[in-house]
Length: 343
Image (cartoon, rainbow, N blue to C red):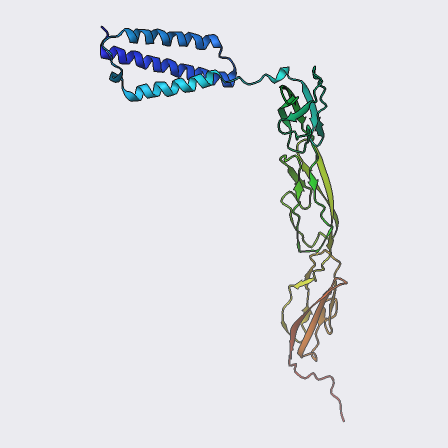
């Protein structure tokens, strides 16, 4: 006699075998490698074990845990369904129709009916009721289409493989109007690029702007600058050109190196201003009298007093002016006897 533990063990083996059918059948739906002979061998093993269980006199049906019985029943049902499931179709044997994205798929059907009955056709998606499909960008791929012919009594079906190949289009750059700024202002370019194929786009911007799209102009950037924007999807490239006009903004000359002066009569006044121009323009410097443009004044003993000296620096466009105070102190001299004679 078989003891209760052996019977339960055999029941468990049956469940595992049924699970094997379930898994093998699942794989057959994915890979198409499982065969009917594989399933048949497992079925034979299950039946053999079931026969042994029937011969076990000490086993009552309620001796087996209910959850194990239920699991076996459920797995058995699912395995049966999966075993009958068709494997994935081999599209290599189907008639092949090829178009490019944006082209129209339009099927032409040739059929005959021995009874000379009228034939009507229906088509599976993505075709419409007329057997047509206007493809668009993004539809690239393979589609199994089923064509059904009917004489209202009987139907026949045939599959065809519709292959839609990608139609690559270059990226589109929205036109950017020409730009005008003044020296010292910032130029910002933000290209708007679209791609009907939804490809990843690489955008580049030539100097002096650069790929970040920002250019801070300075006092030396006056003139016209051509900037090229390029957008590439890795295969096709589009270009757009933007002209940037930078208007000169004059920077006045700068005067340094001068300050108020105090001298005594008889001393020489020297004024040597340091003048610079950020634009690099030619500078003309003038100094008011009594010093003069050469910046040198040899004072005399009658020149004591206070003077406002004006220094000007001009680049021909703008003039910078600076004032300094010049004090010439009096120097007292003893009288000088020139000659002595009789009256």
